Image (cartoon, rainbow, N blue to C red; front, side):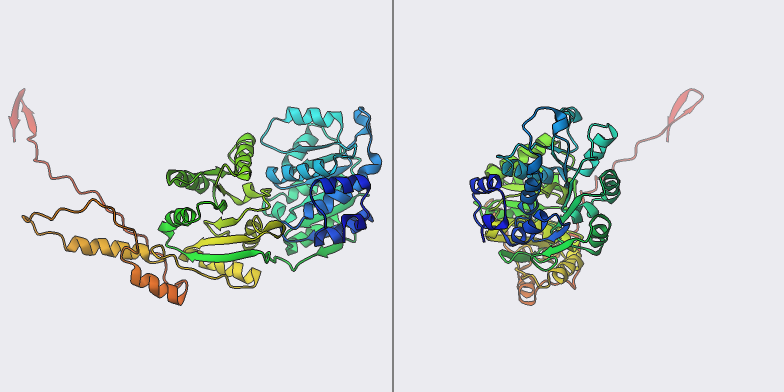
Length: 467
């Protein structure tokens, strides 16, 4: 099947050809005809399967009858609204709309927080048919009366499950109340939960459910692996893995903004070009970092889940979970950044004993057990072995009065550093979850030598006596 078989108009077919696409993906084959027929849709597909084009192309075709070359803002009212959870995803959708609308006289704009509103206000006042927005910034414009949603004909919720996770449901309900009841609504998501279905019942009218794969299924082009690791050695293991794949780009996921910045700094100190992207960075900083990563000038991008939404690199070879997500569905979202558009991908997870339950939940969701590979010298228990080795060496210290033999200044390889037997046992038996992580005791500074007691002066009758 070709795009021409889907009933697209010549202007869109030309844009698709110029973009380098020839055959529609399964989600596009099923969704485009249904949307063109005017029906509401609840669509689900694996991340990277082309669902953005699946709703963008039919949306543009349905609005093509309103295409107008006039300059009056009244001739360009807002007729389509696309909501995205993050700035990065909103920009990605906006770029797709711009690309496919090249040969149509339709205007589009993207509005999101973190930047000055004045430029956005000026664009909205000139009139735009398609608005791609994050919920919070859209409501800011509604409050400032700089946007009118009374003529919206089509509404799209992209990554609806992420909007739920980020607490956008109250904002979405406020937005729904501002839209005409007689509209076409589309809800797209990589995963479906019971909460998503409840939201669909509220905003969709007799929707067509389109799923090209079972719920929460991961791409077959992705290879998964778990590296059991001592919690205190995660950073070292990450640097070790990256140094052993010098030409590989990687997107590294962490849970918090603090760890995000610290890990990027550590990798740079280790000679690995890395940068961080998280919510505290300005939009300009985030854009520059993403551009550097997409162009290949930046080898490693460390990101939180929220900031990574919208990162779309067709041939990203590897995603690394430095910390496992606390929600199993987020694992599907994270690894969906690799293995896109039919390319091979690799999903690596560094897992310590405390993360056992999260790994089990992930495996339960994706319905298969992820292979585990021990990297010698970094396995759980290594830190305990290292600490024991130090105490043993301390007990064998040279007797007082004997001159110690000079030590060689040549650096010795790290190796197992006392954990070899334990590593071999874990490698044979799998991840030893039964043994919790025991923090390595820290060396305390030596106590200062006792100071002689100073005499205390007692003044009696103006004379000082010493005790």
